[in-house]
Image 1 (tube, rainbow, N blue to C red):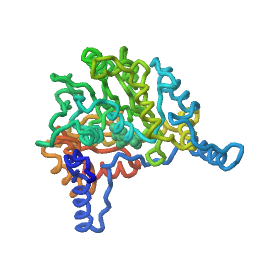
Image 2 (cartoon, rainbow, N blue to C red):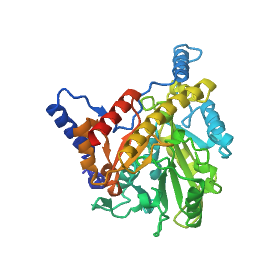
Image 3 (cartoon, rainbow, N blue to C red):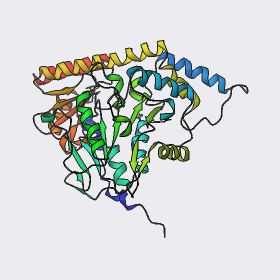
Length: 407
Ligand code: PLP
């Protein structure tokens, strides 16, 4: 008899997006002549940078010729891309990362979801609350949690991110072996300083723990003092893995390219307490289950590091950051306490009541859709997230409507 993985039964169906869709539909039915502006989704709206498009075209032409056609590439990614990443994203910022410590993949979602496979099922996992749900659900699927109770899975350590701690959680009081951190943060938009990140690295070193650092929004950092990588923090090479993505950096959400950095010194332990290197484990997992990112896509990602690519990427991110600034100012002018909107495309807004009532008010009075914070965990209650990924015109119109409706 074929049995299912019953851990999947513990997953709670997320009604969030269905619920949002239902409310939006009702508003549309009741107000057929009113336009809706969607500032809920975290997907880019600007097209690919021209340098990436040109590089992808050239690579497709190469694939059309017998002399330059390529079949399977290296599972970990082509050297031309790994070398550029190591130099531009790490070595030039003083982070000592080598090309063979970089694994190219088709997404930070897959990587942050898959990485837990190489750790024991007994691992004590700590996740932020509110959280990018992939970290939680993949550990539920793997059987590292009990059932859900009051919005939380038994067995997980929740790291509460609240206005009181500026959305940077306190170090856990109970043992945590595997710690997920994400900065700049989705959904709160909060950033982390080098000193604060150092505390986490020291904790991991003192407690034989490991940090999974999701830096998918690194490109939005404009504050020079903020770390762009956990590997800018002394001592991190032994205790951290970092995830990066071209999705938000260069508009690759539909093109798919990302990477994971596993330093050679990064360690975990076997059941005898013997120190074991993580790099060969992830390499083995990657080689066995992944066959590489498409050659034209890797060439497009490489073009991000060309002088034209760098300028175009900066322009695009500046565009979203200006949108974020407009949203931040408009919501602060309405008297709301906000986080993010600087060094981040997300603005996390304290609603003063429950998340859904501000959601409904923005929808019904202004025709603007946001995301209720409750979708990201219990600590998201009382907040909404507004995303800067939209056109300038739509963002300005949305904020104009909100200011008019709520004043
Ligand atoms: N990590 C965070 C925090 C995200 O918000 C997202 C996407 O929204 C991802 C990872 C996924 O990125 P990718 O498109 O590379 O799979």
